[in-house]
Image 1 (cartoon, rainbow, N blue to C red):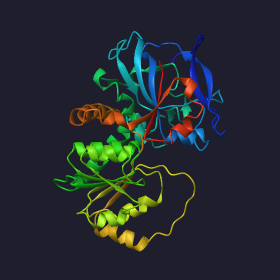
Image 2: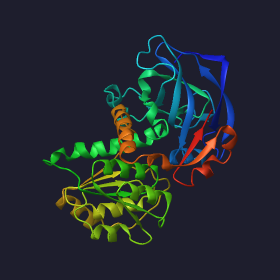
Image 3: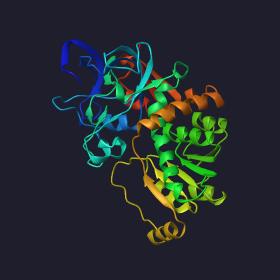
Image 4: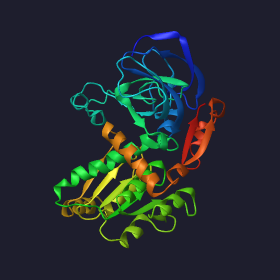
Length: 367
């Protein structure tokens, strides 16, 4: 991007990384519009667990030359203007954006920054690059994804869905080792946004899904799970082991609880030839007694795979747009019910971290 134009400033929500609960309103100099850049008026930004970690000073890094980090990496915006070399976007169109920016490692050079080898990447709103909680932003065309106007109510969910898209795509790629593999039964551990989007994605593939979460039904999450034809299980009533014991071979598990212990429980119940995809980033240094001999024996004799998955590729965003449309076709209005808290403008963001712990998905809406 080009040099900063100090006369063109926008309001933004930022933190001082490393300082707990330092959320504050700031004024940000907007980069001038380069030839391949797009000026975007921000409409909605989702708040997720990563944002809460940044607000709590457990994570996050400001861009070079400043002590502030504008937060937010789940974007829905409207194109206001485009540079002369932009060919795929026009004013008035809805867009979302990828999050990670490459560092030049072999994977990034090959177009796979989600598999970055050196881990010197930057990420919008997370590591070394300002995020999307600003009145307007400038972004390069090749980091943007077009959102059809009919998906405007749910477009802000594209970024978390892209994470799930990658997880399931990686499972499919791994399972090419088995001729004709199709998951019939799956567990989804966790009923936050990632778990619920994983449930919807697997149900769209007609997989029998059991979504396990802490709260007893009825809850907003349990209603979404049941409305798409999946099965909601409260671990206060049936634990992971008890639930799995009553099921046929578990072909796929998506772990999205945000806690470490369920990952090891999932390894124990994963079926033969199955795949467990770990999506949680767990803080702290928790320790647990693990039956390592039994786990290793099961993994080897059962041809099981445990894989971590983070971030997403551009194709996962594209697939996510397609599947958001499919969700709306199959279950009209259901996906939008994930948005349980709406903050209207920067005046309502003082308690953004607390708001994000309630309900399912918190979204900041800007005029």
